[in-house]
Length: 484
Ligand code: B12
Ligand code: SF4
Image (cartoon, rainbow, N blue to C red; front, top):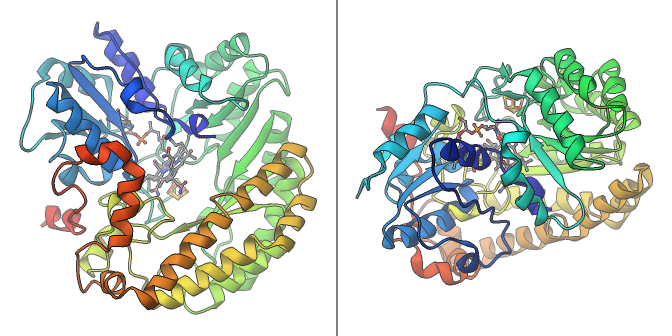
């Protein structure tokens, strides 16, 4: 799947660099390529877009390119979350990025060391190059996806909701040009016989009618299949009917919590089992119209206490057997969300290396209402329940279409289901037996446990040699310190 999940912005940056007259080499690293072969040698400036989970890889690459005389720029979720740290390893670290900012970087284009400069546009860009302009970067990326090919598109930026754990909670909602959307879809129909589009909007369909009109103006029913992340409050039955007509096959609504964030799921003040019943009914209704549904949950929120939230999620899994539950462990990505300041103020953020901050391999916020061992026991019990043979079978039966049925099985028995049970189990076992790891979890030491160092060395392979000194450590309170 990985090439199908590639980001839009690196393609955009490629288009903007070419517009300035530069020759661009574009590489999408999906985790499998031999980077030594794919990366160009003789370059003046290198832009890297990275999530925090890929930060160490990005730091190692920057070091390698700088040693050969290039100037390096980091953008993307990691740069937005941890600019203070990234400046140590890049000449430029950029936040919100528009065409003018890229132009400024290219014109200045000089080494900034030992500390890089931090630049950011005042707001999200008003417009971005569409599929037609990005096609020459989209096409080689999709070639890396053997069967299923998903074209990334964007209809809006920001979000009108204010979930305090989210990077977009303070970014105003802004639709992109609907005419460009229509034009892009027409273009795609010329390029592919049966295109599939993945919307990268944080919350798809906020301006629902405008969005659907823009799609319907270009796409005869059923010609393009769509996937989108959308909040439950936008997924009323009339909206679902329209989405079905227009070819939406995959929806990923966020439930997040049984006690919090009611406005987003339109459950108002309802909490606990009442909310489970209501959401489960809603999700089952969604599945009548859309064959593949993934419901997203955050585990370990401060509103959770005791066994109940985990038991409620198990009930949800039973009541909505066809939905694939996506679990994220509560994570504070540096300055990505306002809530992170609170965690840092309370000294609850652990210095887990960036490599493990992918919402699963580590939870870098000390849970408010659970000792670590209890928390992991609950997470393991929930994950086991979700991927038990009975639940896998029920999911299979409750999903009508063939592809989604098997996709659910594959996800359950691969690294996502069974793999996580194994990893959480290993961490839980070490909480009993590995004294150093236990002390790290309890914030009694910041020295990294060998267990994590070994995993990073293995994952980074030969790039481990290029990791700059100090890169494994970061200041988990940097955001708070920058505020004072
Ligand atoms: C769409 C999306 C996805 C999609 C597409 C992923 C992709 N490769 O882009 C899917 C569903 C696949 C996905 C998966 C994951 N996601 Co996601 N995702 C998002 C989401 C909702 C929107 C991001 C987006 O594209 N916005 C539109 C772009 C145009 O805006 P932007 O991201 O703000 O980018 C601006 C700047 O940062 C900059 N910029 C961005 N990239 C680059 C690159 C360069 C080179 C430059 C110069 C500038 C630049 O320019 C933009 C314009 O100002 C965000 C949450 C959010 N609301 O932003 C989470 C988010 C980015 N995801 C997140 C996470 C954790 C994940 C997963 C690890 C979850 C998981 N456990 O599987 C995976 C990892 C996937 C991967 N490694 O590729 C975190 C990242 C936190 C972090 N610091 O790393 C976010 C912030 C959500 C959160 N938890 O707060 N995700
Ligand atoms: S609805 Fe989704 S995108 Fe919007 S603020 Fe909440 S979590 Fe973020």
